[in-house]
Amino acid sequence: MLNLSSMKLSLTGFLALLVFVLAAQAAFGQMSVGQVEVKYLGARNYYAFTRVVFDTGSLQPETFRMNFDPIQNRLVLYPSSGTMSLSFAPVHAVSDIVREVNFTQVYNQPAIIITLSSAAAPGYRVSYLREPNRIVLDFYGSDRNQDAGFLRLIRPVRTVAIDPGHGGRFFGSFQTGGMPEKELAMDVALRLRKALTAMGFRVVLTREGDTEVSLDERAGIANAARADVFVSIHASGSYGTKGQGPEFYTTGAGELNTGAKSKTRMVWDEQNAPYLPDDLRLARSLMLDMGAMSGRVSVLHQTRLAVFNGLAMPAVMVELGDLNDPDQAQMLMDEAYRDMIAAKLARGIEDFARGVVK
Image (cartoon, rainbow, N blue to C red; front, side, top):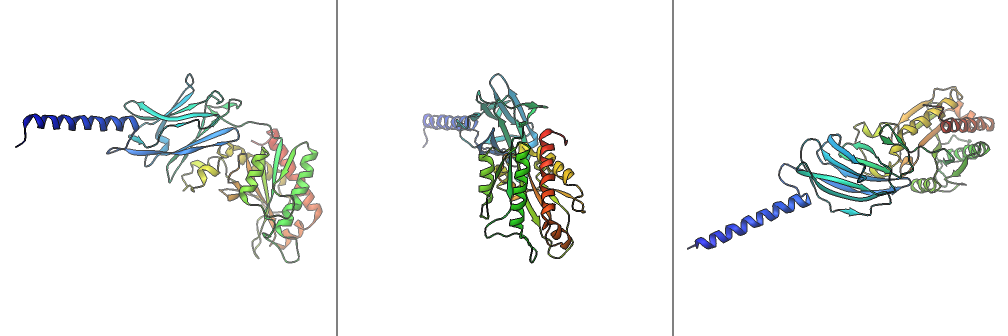
């Protein structure tokens, strides 16, 4: 037979355990029924900014409220509707810019706290990703300017990274008896370097000869040189059909908000998100200067390419023409025409640097 006093003791112990569990859930943001788990995916430090990323589960990232506290120099992040739980431990000393990523209670529900260091500027830039839902927050150093409530990297264009496509065992496109794409790209890159150097720019090449360089190495060379723009040079091949004229590829402003499925690498490797408006401006500048030089209409593509992975600067890839179009191939084999291409590209970069193109 159960003793009444022992029943009271057991009930008291059960209630005490229940209170402890509920308190632990509140303190550490553990998931409960009806809540959506928000995961901290980590942070990475790049030149001039630190990127912090959260996976918001089924909660739409746009529904999160963000309040910046300038006194404590911290950002408070919480959903405007619905509830969330947090499943990460506090992270300290993230970078020179981000001091801590933690959580607290706001309006009786967990909220994310991102505390910045004294080296950080009073603001941030946010991008929203879909499928999966993610919030990407970029925090900048205190020497960066603020524009319309967001921080933009506004710096003079002093260093240009030129990326001659292919190289080594990778020949790229070619026409029988003509110069393969890897040689054409290198030739135009050297002419472009000469033209830009004469204009006063510092130039770095991602390859100096007929060598094989990985995409990660190309991005590393440009980032290490702290290049202000990146121009990758290629030539297309349509394999027997009449191709386009010069084509320009860039990620483009607003690409992160299109609702398109994001790739796993994209969160980290497209850290040039703050430069997206300048990507498009650089592409337009190059297009305007190359113009109708080939006698074909120039085309601008806004898409994600592997060549942009890992770059921390405005970037454009240029397809100079179609090597499998006999007319274009003949022009591209002409040294005078390649000199003209280099001059036009150099002028486009100069116009971009001067802020001529909007």
